[in-house]
Length: 137
Image 1: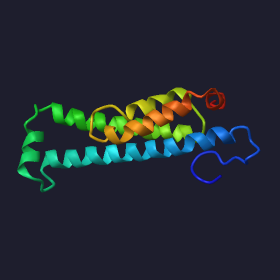
Image 2: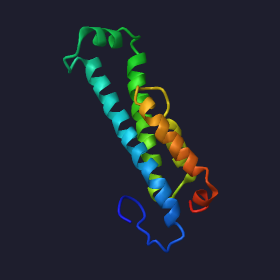
Image 3: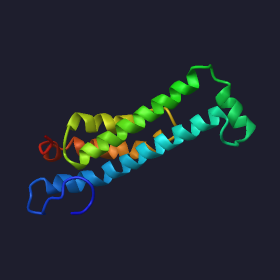
Image 4: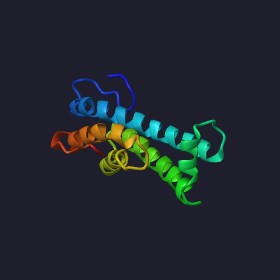
């Protein structure tokens, strides 16, 4: 099996768990990267570094002085937690951190949470299976 994380032969008892968990973990990792990218674009708009329509820029700048930067910071932290959780899923490590990573993919900080919702549910469903959970260290 190729890809990130453990490379185990098909005879290894962890192989079915990895086969089930890798697709949602990969998609959650993508959601985390997209969330961080969105937050960085939002920060660039706040600083005036990107030419954007005035309606969009004034709606972001119309927030209080602390509200928009806090949203950017929270979006970066939740995106990073999603990536860390997905990366731990690839190695079948830290089951609780993987669950936290899936949950942070659906926190409504950025519009990316709508993209992450089905993948987070998929990951949580796979993580709830006893035959998957038993292989976590």
